[in-house]
Image (cartoon, rainbow, N blue to C red; front, top):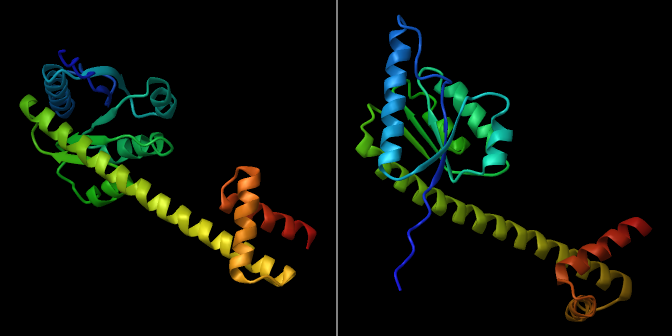
Length: 212
């Protein structure tokens, strides 16, 4: 049986509104030409450009509605301001973010990467370079998200252990139990209620705080 083709990556581009600037605006025409080159590269590589959005206050709502796989920031001299909009828009629901720019002021690259930008590309853009950049960005994002989940799980487990230890200490103090017996009581209660031990322990601590 043939393997079905992979779904095209759904991409939102965050960029200035127009590709036809004022006739005497040389910088804007350069930006427009680079934007066209970027979009040609995306389409030739088989990506699905689902929207081109301006970096404004409505961006978070648009991204929440569209649910793209990846966000591309196509920015020039306003790269920093545009990035701030995009980072805020993806703060609660993280997505890979790739910045393409010709702005050679790289003083804020570190801040951009720390804020969630997956790839920061500063150079002239050839269409054939687009796919390799996005492939690397997607792979890096998956690795970083895996590490983020592992760290969150480790923090959660540590917090749960602290809650269980506090609950055990409470049982030992108030009922005169040994450590093993206190833990056994927590485990039995968790099994009876079909809850995790940490949940039973937290309920016990909440009740103790309430009763004083």
